[in-house]
Image (cartoon, rainbow, N blue to C red):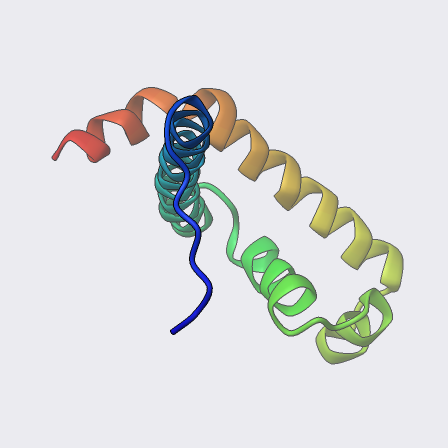
Length: 109
């Protein structure tokens, strides 16, 4: 049988309170991350152009370099860089401002 030591009194209560706090924070963070991921997918489908979506998926999803993406698409690396920056800005704007009310409305459904 393992050596288990039970604490009694204030020390045990403090440990349990801290443990419960950590569990609730993990659940809250997990719910926020789930909602953020779901909203990010919606924004990618509806708020950015097809070209931006393709480049962002190649860059972040397939871990391709900007030079490799440029070769595949037949464009210069600087064009790929600008497309990534513009797509990121639109996604940030969507998640932060423009779609906040829209996304909140979809969460309630």
